[in-house]
Image (cartoon, rainbow, N blue to C red; front, side, top):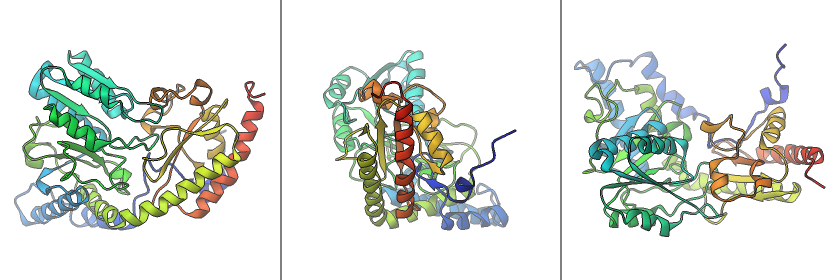
Length: 395
């Protein structure tokens, strides 16, 4: 017999896993509905019924472009952040064959690291740059990797999905561009939380995802700076100016546009409020939970994210007990869930083995409240004390 759902969880889920996905905003859902009910035409059709839908896609392109200060013509709609990353990486590789050198970091999302492995299998030179204990990139190693011969693509995330640590993307991009490299950034976690301005930051390509900014799952975008050479990765049609074939997912594209507009409108207010909630949660955990430590530097990170290790206990056990209490958190990337190994990000930062297995990510968002923080701070300390009492490694 299956276990009945926890009544507290079913009535009062405290959602602190916004880096995995976000709740679609009510305004976003409302904007989608007409394109599911009445305006369901194909935007590529020649008739007026489809043409009116095409205008909605154009409007969404403008809204997404405004969020990152780009030209609408530089926005390609995709199915998700993973597709955007794959399109940037493999679309660049198609241009140069194995002559292309790929330079990335050890703490990237699997949507970059797995394609990096595929490039290596195909004969490309692939360099993965390390980070220090604060999660910051080794810029000297980046310069050394750039010193080689031949075309190069650098892919460095804007913000880490597990720790929230922000890379110095301006310096990374300027360094790479000075060496003649093309620059891609996975900005899936940064967009909507940090001010992202591609007019000031010289990246050539940038990936973003709808479900990280309160749009539904199944839509993303790839920014491609005008003049950047990129082979189409999704073939089969003329859509997206021939850069991504396939009938447009209009309801989700419209949703992404509205979500982008809301994110830009609320950026400063939400960053300040959510950061205060995160800081109060983090302080409370460190004060009440023995063996707790923050992973990654705290000076330069996303306003919503804290990654905390609890020594001598397993993160999986912590998450199980938190879930039973109606608290939703994560041990790292949702795309790597199910693994019993410590996260590659935690390992790359050199977090001690005694703490690496007990790493938990708390990521807040627009709809979190002080009451959510109160509930988490009430639920977590008893869990940590109980598990430490059971641990054979705690004296």
